[in-house]
Image (cartoon, rainbow, N blue to C red; front, side):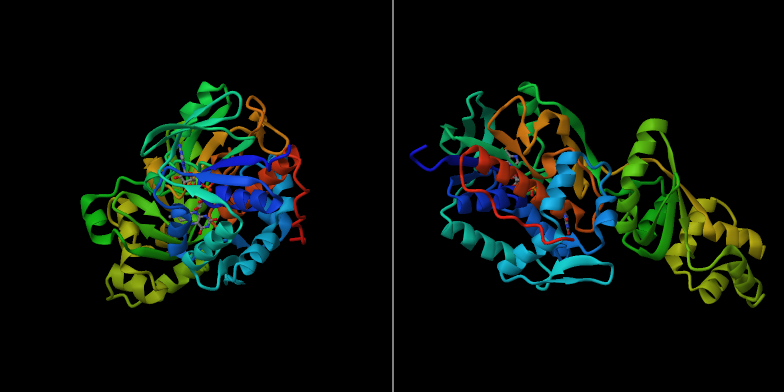
Length: 414
Ligand SMILES: Cc1cc2nc3c(=O)[nH]c(=O)nc-3n(C[C@H](O)[C@H](O)[C@H](O)COP(=O)(O)OP(=O)(O)OC[C@H]3O[C@@H](n4cnc5c(N)ncnc54)[C@H](O)[C@@H]3O)c2cc1C
């Protein structure tokens, strides 16, 4: 080629912007198109929770967080591990720190400074951002069609990257409407499903009214041999929060397979049943049950109410029987919160629809990265890490295909 290759990246989320940066640095002329009026909306939303960029745990533990680890994804994570993401953020002036849980955050504890510095770098690299342009067609020869404020536009390119995200929080831009475009081109997809979402319970109206918005701190959850510890938030519809998200895939699959799921909540995971029973037995006989639970076990009002809600009748006064209830609050799950309320999306473009380098086997020259791929992981930084890693891998393969200089080697070990 005598002119520099032209690349279109569709999707101005972290996957698209990162691939755009890599490709522009390698010498491509890069245009990023997005249906929204401004870029990186979901990343900025993620910043409201501190922007958990990645996790500091060792490689084996980190990789085990992904529901499945197809070879493409495993190789991408090895080539662009958490240390590479942290180094990249530091290069934009956003040094990171490891929180008590091992999660990694930028020191600013939000996304906006990082996004500002990143967009300035992209502008310096000559990346053009074309906003308010929705992808509506993928031509066999590699050109793409967009619907913009002035109507339909065909954009030719030498290669394209689709980084269209999942379908959660559609107000942020990723609405999953790309599924019909790709299905029409014969690309194998796994149905999009909510991931890291809240669950639904048939609360009594009184419980929902009084306790929605109240946390249950330091509890343990068990279902189908899987466990999670942490904080859970009571909602009007059920429960949400980190510990629920960690088990949400198991709960979703259990509901899909059996039509029901039963979550067991341990309100005192640090004490065994015998220790709880001893404390209950030592309580003042004149105290009410609620006072006993509060004074001997420091159970909150909402934890006591949940015990009663799950019992559906009076609680046993016998210390051993009551301790057993506290260790195993049985909660039937009636459903999961819908995809548009989930943190992330499971399903998407299947890995067997890809060639090496995240290129669509049926659409040579068109690559895919980020959350629209069929991988699933809990919160904790695993979502953004896989988003960046797959974008780095796709950009490297695109650069090679376009005859651009070999990409930088990121891996500095885990
Ligand atoms: C509330 C919340 C908090 C989160 N917090 C964290 C966190 O702390 N840590 C973490 O690891 N992850 C977090 N995530 C998840 C993380 O934000 C996503 O995994 C990540 O943004 C995915 O990046 P992406 O580039 O693949 O997709 P997206 O960020 O969704 O970007 C996709 C882009 O494609 C555009 N687009 C879609 N369809 C079209 C179309 N047809 N035409 C043109 N443009 C289109 C969209 O407008 C969007 O800009 C959070 C998510 C939410 C909702």
